[in-house]
Amino acid sequence: MAEPEEQASVPGLADLVEEARHASAAAPNLEVLRSLESDLIGKRGRIPGLNRTLVQIAPEMRKVAGAAINEARSTVEALLEARRAELTAVERAAALAADRLDLTEVPPDPWARGHRTVITSTRDRLEDVFVGMGFEVAEGPLVETDWHNFEALNIPVGHPARSGFDTLYFDVGEPESILLRPHTSPVQVRLMTSRPPPIYAVMPGTVYRKDTPDARHLPTFNQIEGLVVDRGITFGDLAGTIESFTRAFFGPDITSRLRPASFPFTEPSAEYEITCPICRGTGCRTCSQTGWIELGGCGLVHPNVFKAVGIDPEVHSGFAFGFGIDRLAQVFHAIPDMRVLLDNDLRFATQF
Ligand code: DAH
Picture 1 (tube, rainbow, N blue to C red):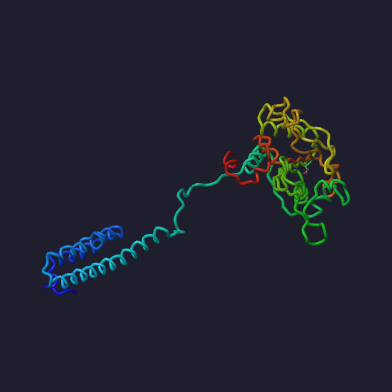
Picture 2: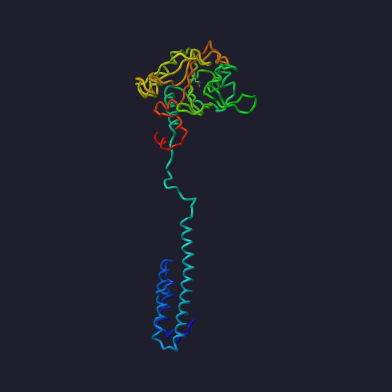
């Protein structure tokens, strides 16, 4: 530090150092500090500017005065440097705090919830309609035994119907004895072996097939099975039930028809078709110009099925049906390609 009398030899020098001390301590941020720096010791700053006043000083005093100015400049530099270190630390801490990820932060709208998928809501509506008609809702396992899935349903080993259910077997027990169920019909068997008639039940659930996805097929899809077992059940009861269901589900201008078909577990068997809900029966691309859409199969329970589960076909009779929930949702909502059901695309999902 210069001696007071040396500093006094340069008018205003001591005041400038004092001003620098206060102003740097008060600088709120690095930007203010930078402009203070250029004001005080920059090229055209006030302290270097004092050098120009040296000419007014007696020549023998100039050396001392010049040294005093340099000394003051170093002092101010040190003051600014110290304040710069403080402000840098403060600004870094603020930037880190602003950047910090708060994992406990509450999401903006804590109540934003999803909703049921179009398949779930279709299944719920199907259940509602059938419950309204006096049916109960039952479920069975997704992994089935060969006996429940084929044997008890009158599809013995080697039966050609097995190939239609090209399916996915588990590597447990006897080879090809445990499988991912390819249809919901085994739940009929589980119901009939678990209690005596009368039975009025629908059985919705997921099924699996080795199908390649396309516009109308998915390898994982959903069916709803129906089963009625009682005394004196006829094909007329089946047709009437199907027609009542169709009108309740689709509305009064859609009707159903049954066409002869063949299933191992029903006799006689029929295909269940409804008026094409897209063209209302006049013919369009969706129904291949026929005016009708096939939704599933049905028929009277085959006596061999009753025998397999220990029900006397001389005493009881019944009907069964099964159709695809995804197919029904596709028709009902006019979804051109079923694969959107697996895409998880919100633009699709939020429409329902
Ligand atoms: N299980 C059959 C399938 O997946 C559909 C079916 C047809 C179910 C006729 C039935 C029925 O109950 O009676 O292809």
